[in-house]
Image (cartoon, rainbow, N blue to C red; front, side, top):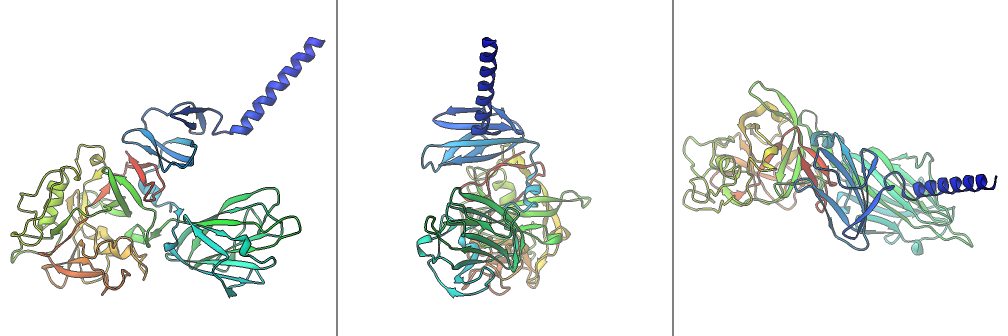
Length: 497
């Protein structure tokens, strides 16, 4: 009998240890290992694994403490950047990843910088207030996060931060409420509509635990308001509220596709071993029968030099894309990673002033990892009189691998409104859109007193002999998918196919 009791006790101890281990490490952490001083916990389709999977078609979610973790699909390895302390990382691998166009069209959200919205800060005697006494020291901003400053708050007042979004779209707000008196409340508004937080109309602080989470705000057309009711007691103080806004930056432009818009949306992608940016997922003609597919269009983040649009200017020359030296330069030399400096296409202005067009190290090699991702499509060759194309597919006639941004790309990068355009990076940059009123002119960007959308302020019709910067644009094959990254400049999307 005694041995039986001992056996039962041992079984109970073993079960207890198993449960405690499960609670401590959870589903994603029940198999951990240390490699190069980093504690890893890995899963594959929700099941714990003890090593990185072999090369395959996976996407991966990465969450690291004290570092930025990146999975590089081309090299098939994990790297760490911006290390600030002892590092631990959770990596969740998923098979059957979605295509990059599916991701863009699902409005992916990233933490926004303050340049994406303007703010008003005030206090009042009610959480419903739309205005009150203006202040500047209730909330501080650091690393794209807002935090209330308890020492500057008066118990019993309501402190409001209104964030006026630059581009209407889909947003999310994430918050952390520190320990504090339960009389501290968090209220959250999308415009005049009060949002629920964890199923309630407001969130209470707790003296015993930190509360955190994210609220899907849905479509925001005007502003988001965060309100903290500050309160203390004889035993518990005013809670510190930290929060940040996440936005997709993607706008649905109907037949013109899904477009990234605003000041600096999260559309960075690592392509051709350098930074590029996603213009959008755009209906594009892919064959001579007129079949269209939504393909992701990307642009190189940096220019490849100052080049004439058409250095062989003649009486028969037009600004229509495909009938110019820059078109040939991009499709026969840049695409192919060749040196075109001595060719008859590499000129700053006329054929008497040479440019530098050595693309052996920065060009796209068709047989290389990234070159295989480029789709040969029909490019827009329409001319414009200052009006954007409602549907680019209706003007797509030239079959090629590389092009330039169009007049419409510029227009939609502002959200089709009077907001700043992320795509307007250089004061003088070529588009591939001809000027309808003068056949020897092409639209290019122009930086006046501002870079806001205005038909007389952000573009000019420019003679084709002029030397202006050019940034290559390509469409990605529909099989390309995002492996990792969050679309920010420091952690761009990583691609595979």
